[in-house]
Amino acid sequence: MPYFHAVAKAAASQDTRGARRIGVLLVNLGTPDSPTYFAVQRYLREFLSDRRVIDTSRWIWLPLLYGVVLPFRPLRTARNYRKIWMAEGSPLAVYSRRLAAKIQAVLPAALEDQVRVELAMTYGHPGIERAMQSFAESGVDRLLVLPLYPQYCSSPTGSVVDGTNRALRHWRSLPEIRLINDYHDDEGYVLALSRKIQQHWDAAGGRSHLLFSYHGIPASYVAKGDPYQRQTENTTRLVVSRLGLKDTEWSHCYQSRFGRVTWLQPYTLDKIKELADRGVRELSVASPSFAVDCLETLEEVAIEYRERFLEWGGERLTLIAGLNDDDDHAQALVTLIRNRLTGWIQP
Image 1: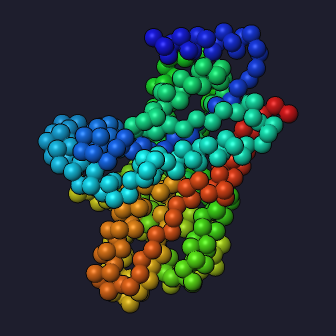
Image 2 (image 1 turned 90 degrees about the vertical axis):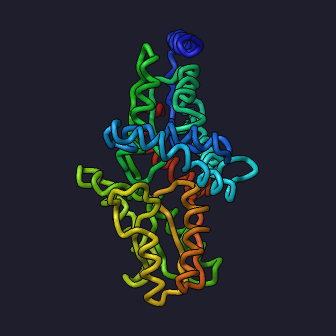
Image 3 (image 1 turned 180 degrees about the horizontal axis):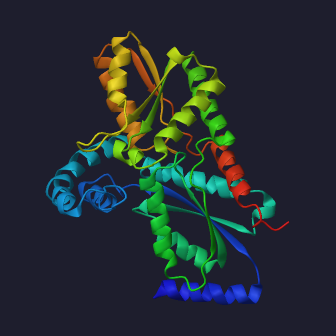
């Protein structure tokens, strides 16, 4: 029962010190522990069993999951992970850890004793409950939750809330909680993203057609009220305006479709084919829905989509790296965090 002891210990220390501690929980989606069949299978089982991710009837979905998806999909997915795996681990985990460390490091000195930053993954390791245990041991009584999804989507963001609430069931004295739903139009985020794109073009020797490729979601989610599509389009408009692009110089689309249902369109591969048929020979692809680079950017875009574009007559497709642990990214999130801590921070 170490978790309950940690909570009791935190409560006792809180009474004696009278201090107020703020926990900032950064959460990303997650990743397998290794690029192997069984590690990927474990990760996919947890991910695809979440009702927020797949809301199909369990009577229909579970036989498909255990009979078709889990036996076969890990073979291809593990092979793709091996193409991009870093010496330190999965790119999503590596860049997320670096970003969390940099955020903690660049917090103003006046906040060092008040604010503790922890990174967690909704699926896989380190889990949300582990981060919450660390907060309990530190005497945290105010909690700011920041899902690392610039645009709100009910599936990943809702799962962060679910995971946080499950962990809080062990707390006798609940912390005051704030949630940053999204930051799709945050000035610092838009500026960091725009600078990253311009830096990419500067290094490449000039501009090329800019393709905004966001992670897709089923169209039915939007029909039920999910604001994701509207927010992705707003992010694109803000970046296009800041970069001063003409309508013919950019496109907006959605990648990573799964299953047979209709997802948000246009699909990225369809858009790439359309651009190649129109005579566009060079593409720069940005994926603004991913806070850090991952399988969907480093393999799906930079390898798979590049190969298809070349097959269709294109000459060059380059991935604009994610914001990752860039200074601009860390500073934008620190500013966002500070703004949301208004009223909590002691002078």
